[in-house]
Image (cartoon, rainbow, N blue to C red; front, side, top):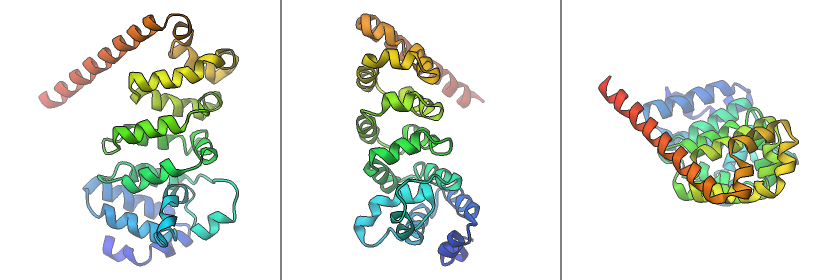
Length: 238
């Protein structure tokens, strides 16, 4: 089936039958095969495999499911539902380095658009939770998003993007996020979505008693680890 679809992938893209591309990507992930081939064919269809400098645009082009030429005529990133789902799938491929690096190369404006979009915000879940995305890459995205956390946290879909990062972040990374949120506590508390995160992350405690906040985070981490071990043991026994 894959060999039959290799040649017409660009035609499929042009005809807007993008669900076919999504199903093919998901099959490659599910069967752990042809993943590199699919990625190359997708990049070829999006016109970002050559010249080499275009490869850094793989993630935004996948999100929009438009070619390089179509994208440069637009000033704003468009999030396509199937494009977002394909990118999420690519991030869960065994070797997602191309998608990871391309996403890390996105400018902050496009990242903000992605994080606050109802279709795009789930990309951050895939990025943070994929077993094939390394700790260094997660650390880079957390640092790259500095300056955006408050504005993103104060939106409906952006707040869940921040929460996806928080759930996987190390204590050191959480300190970095909290250092940005802390001075803006009044802004967060005055916002419907920001106030939920401020409460969940114990922002007031962080501002006034950081040692207690740190102890609390340690307890939460140990609780999550214990729960994960119980789930893992249950899975083995069943």
